Image (cartoon, one colour):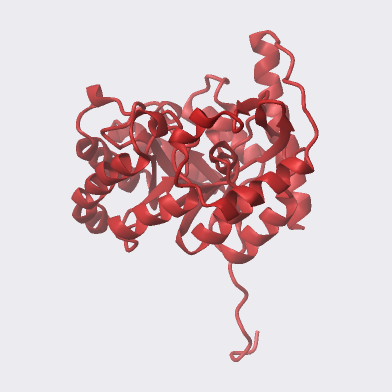
Length: 328
């Protein structure tokens, strides 16, 4: 290549969030072997249970196997917000748990620690801003630990806890030098937000991601949301994937395939809005436009555990194939 030729930006890295295959009950080494068979570049251990333990010997063994397979690793935990219902205080303070994850990420070779505030339940227990303030305090308290280790904290927009403008506030007030976003494309729909709006707001802060498709439609109570295989929803996930690839070069685009039945959001009931009073009207209008073009979807049929495990793998592999086709 001539010296004056422009270098190509790094391509997006295709990955798997192991929550996609959460029911397999595999060892971390079996997860790695499966991901290598799927020819992805990144394996996202979104929860401690998937990596087995945080014992240094285990982490080193997992790292060695990943290096043998040519896989990059990302490490994650659940809530590190002490006021969230999802936080497990039995494991120590939020600062202690997050610090332990930073140490573990350094050992296993992950550049990030993924964490979350909580879930949509936290919007009902108190104004979400109260939880955000407690979360920001924890992040600030671990800044020195993270920066000394060269690890960044990737906060996910998780399970209907925060809209994207709220996550942006957390990142900027905690410190965008060491905190960024784990951008999830499915979770915006659980907080009445167009995934494309979430991308537009959070793109400058993205450290890593989860991607899955969603279906949204109107029902008599208000709105329904179901998560689907990639390409089977109505949020224009193909356009989202292309925008992510162009706007987040070098970052992981990790499948978090979850296929669900409809979750109802009774937006016609006045009391429902007690937990959502801060949602901008223009954003909600964008979400309604998605619902207007949606069609009802039935819940997946109940099946035995072995069939369920097989279906998880089939859903993930179909989603990978669709995403590869979109990315070309």
